Length: 250
Ligand code: IPE
Ligand code: IPE
Ligand code: MG
Image (cartoon, rainbow, N blue to C red; front, side):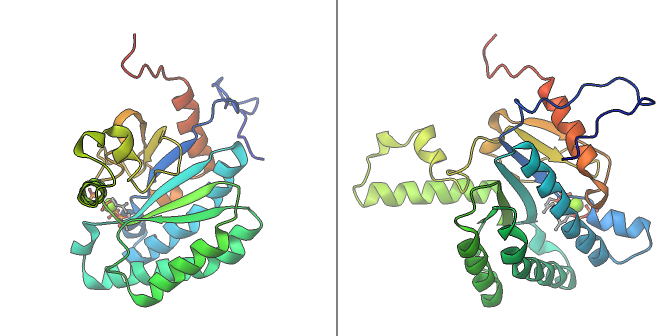
């Protein structure tokens, strides 16, 4: 396991505490387009490099005991991009899904897709069902891909499901509390989100994990996602471990 301990020449800095690793990390995989543009390459090349970067980050997170990694791959707002870019992103996603069975098997990883899959092509929908099925027994880290995901849409969906439960008599309106609604979020089966990371220099959530972010810690980095490596992840986690999470207490 690579833990990026300081070499003799490096300045003194805190080391990772393996007993206090965030259980659930969210990553906004941003900056693929700028990464490519700076190299004079098409944006789609940046998306491919971004997708390729995920494997090493998953391996690193799995190796230190992270239970769930939620990665933002396509937002409900990304449909406003040029059709050619959307098509390239969907093809990339499809290609990735086809590799999941092979890639996840040796890692005991489990795949989960969070978001509204209804507007996706039949071919992608089938690949999602297959990839989730063949990895369902994985008892290692969950890779949760936020796909056609928006925090507001997730909360609206939870409200809709709660309304249906009231309508069918399963619950009464008074039963709708934070715990109940939380159980209707895509992440209900995952631990609380401890840390949200956004590479590429932007300092906003862009509709990512709005419900779950309530007490998550944030880490921003100017590095674009394709260049965001294990050592950058480790730096973010070490910083997370130095924080005093009070949850409203003193
Ligand atoms: C993130 O990279 C990937 C998706 C949103 C699908 P971007 O495509 O947003 O890259 P930038 O932000 O334009 O550099
Ligand atoms: C957020 O990035 C969505 C993903 C990384 C999938 P965007 O690039 O779409 O966000 P904005 O437009 O900069 O807020
Ligand atoms: Mg972006």
